[in-house]
Image 1: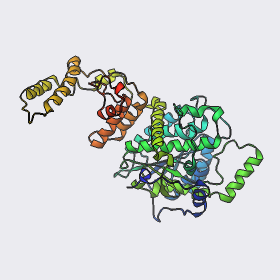
Image 2 (image 1 turned 135 degrees about the horizontal axis):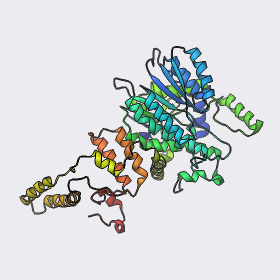
Image 3 (image 1 turned 180 degrees about the vertical axis):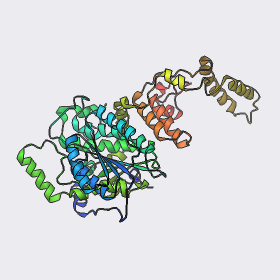
Image 4 (image 1 turned 135 degrees about the vertical axis):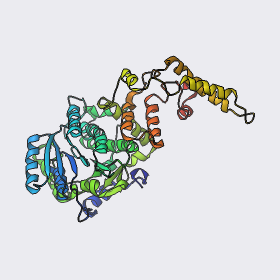
Length: 468
């Protein structure tokens, strides 16, 4: 499969090339006649109005059995659900409260999904905001556009992924998770890309730019998905980003300045905007038409498109990794399987992985080892390996060796995510878990103290202390 990561980056100017193609030339790809979502359940955030409402309507038109409208205002959600029920009385339509600027609300929503839904086939994370004025979410301290469009949306995605995996359709069909994006990411300037740390730099009112903040909030999702896709199998959940293009009649902008600005946006939408029906068809295409070929992809105008060009540059790779690390650190409080060392001691067998008698056996084998040739270092390597393990094993006296605190907790949530998304028996899964653990612990084994060989090669000579 050729995904967005594998494509050559696009350097076509956003205006006029990309914009006019999206708005006037691209043709919708509607579900094939006879497509049925009977028996399936979907969640749409921001589903009471605009594109979210229209996407829900189109899914119900395809015989969706149950729809969850996740909304800020339950009252408005109930009004929208009543209209949908009149059109589709055979379907179950529920309204659940979800405040995307509140981490506790997101966690409570995910917990409700896990406990109350017997099945979940698809989720469309549509809720978003654009502000003309700088606004801070008091509970998090982050600027609202970045908070809602990026941080909160990524938290909800991470919490829903294991639920989608376990509650997807019987028979092995993968679930779908689509996060709403924007073609404007292709024109991102990203002026604060060099800031360290990066995420807090968006919280400075002195550098607030409503358009750049909005575009950056979507660009950050590109960067996060770049890494996330390595932890999620397309056999379990197909994750992608979908751009609806510029659509008339939505409530994305919550605080337009005065009647002149409102009139200008209305005129621009009327002359260039897609209808909500066409815009929402991009969502439906992502969760209904597209299959594994769209996993980890950015979908624009119903086709797989490259990510923003900056992601493919050496500088962009560095920033992308920083975004991943900082985001997991920010959302680390939501880890679902954090346990104390005492919990780990109780859950693990009393004996360590390598028993003392096993080490004795290896010692006996090494004492009888015959050199194959003069430069044969096999015994030396094995001896060093055993020596580094025998100390912790002897100290543990049959108990789990103590693990020293990690110097880098920003990757801890990545480990928990990997544990929920991979099968430990696969080599690919083991590789992902090893990389996450090494990233968490500064490329150093927490038991032996040895530095990973690949990391060792990249370290300046003056930092190669304690490598054994």
